[in-house]
Length: 449
Figure 1: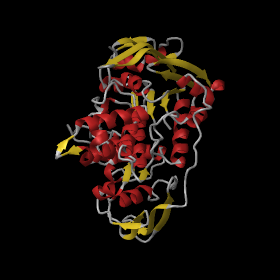
Figure 2: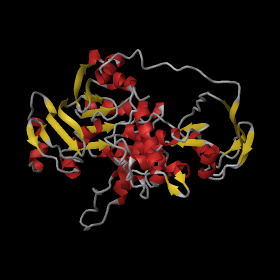
Figure 3: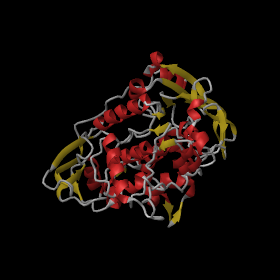
Figure 4: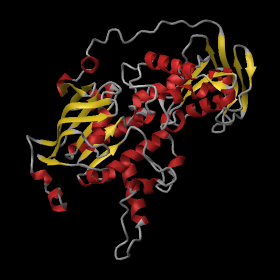
């Protein structure tokens, strides 16, 4: 193990120029071989993109580097020295910072407390007293780097999802990391925020930081990455240098086949008005009304920047929040939606923006999550029809290609993309008349899209 002096002198040692090197890494979970003989290298001053389908092993591999998981085989080398990373604290000592795909913040604390949580600077010569003045000033400076103009004293729960993601990134930057791992960091960011993030990443790359960047957005990979490592089914599937990076080539490595069959949607809409809202206002924008109509078989895209009120509108339609004014009509008849139960009974489903907080019960099995919104449908004479529940769960898992070893697998153990498919499955199982989708492709690979 390294002491503080050895850590500070690491940059003097190299292993073929690699800052980080993984050799033959394997990881097994009950019923699943998540990683099998994976190799990965990262140089200082390089942005390495790691791509692959949902369940390919990307997040698992990153959690091995970050000390969240322990590998069952293989070696981790930093600056040519074999190391062990038994926990997140040890990873921090090696100056490894991890921005997780799922937000990992304490929403009851303010921004500054989250940025410095667990490593708060102390007032000199005053035992145990946190230097709050320094924390707020340093946090303010870091927030400027990610273009977040928020008061460091603001509670995280009062921020939008996109702003919370920027706080995660700010916390990682505050660690002065040598290795920065970013797992789908732009999934909730606007284009402006994404552009600012890319600028920040290029700046820290130029200062010698090695960046590992996971994304399903291949346009981002092409724009940002110096090199690409592709994983498929927990194994290495290819590597592309900067001049070789091309979305079609990446996809062929990811799935082992051409991309011609991926896209294409037969338009089957009609003139029948399936769903309408009129003079509809939300508590966020009580003076701005919304009118919209969706026909049978039609996909209506609701666009707008972060903070424009898209999520709030969907929440009000679904009955999570109370609408201030307006009417809702389904198949030409006005309906009253006072809560989500009314919406479900009416035939409306909602895939929320934040699956972890609002879309899933992570500690429960796939079958329980998929059947939860429609429990009354699986009852006979007041008793649960478990055969029907099992049947619909298996059907949805097959139709949506959810990678799981059984319907009893706990959802928390699935990859982010497969979790998102479970959220979609639980609504499709009800055969809804209207499906509301809020950022539905967050954490979804190109094939799943």
